[in-house]
Image (cartoon, rainbow, N blue to C red; front, side, top):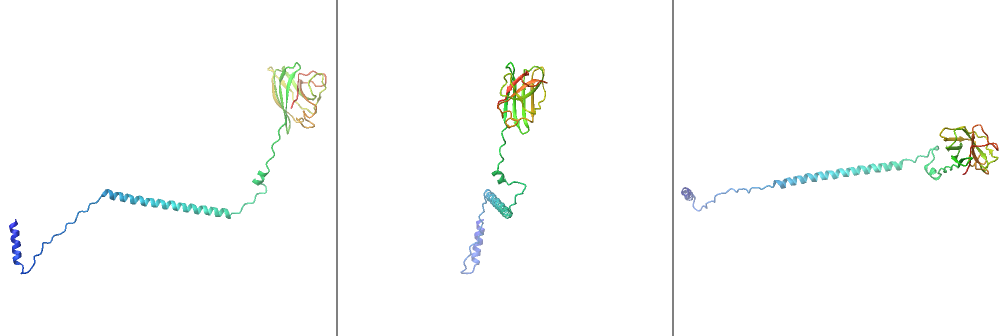
Length: 233
């Protein structure tokens, strides 16, 4: 294989003109192969997408903040431009209400009676309360003989017998009934009496008592009564 090649070279040299320089054979350069790191390329693409997403989020947040600032400014401008409404003549101003609080309600006067039989045994209590509409009478009685009874307020300081107790004028007390259990629980109203009124008050004079008598009886001096109690404030 080498002999023919050498022969061909010799023939070429002999055929060349005198003084010619043989040319070196031309060689074609072989390019160096390019090595690509695909993992690094993917990471670069992901980072680029993340950077784009972050930039878009920052821009959206900035746009939202700008819109909110514009809305707040518009609301403030509208509030400053709106005139303050005048208070309605029929509606008191809040500052006036705060400066002039309502006076506290008056405390209702009260009194208490312990009713006792002529033997001295207690048969219960009576609570008295003064109200704008008159005297409220709360009864909680027991151990009474069955029957019908009436109550009377008398202007006298004690329950000792004999006594000359004068009834308070214009009393309109209903008849009360005690059953077989001997109990009476009720709430009554007497519009013509009070606790401390100078004219109708049970405690405005030198003393008062509450007596219970059988229905149809009276409280004239010397008439027997079932029970009596001193009215105490």
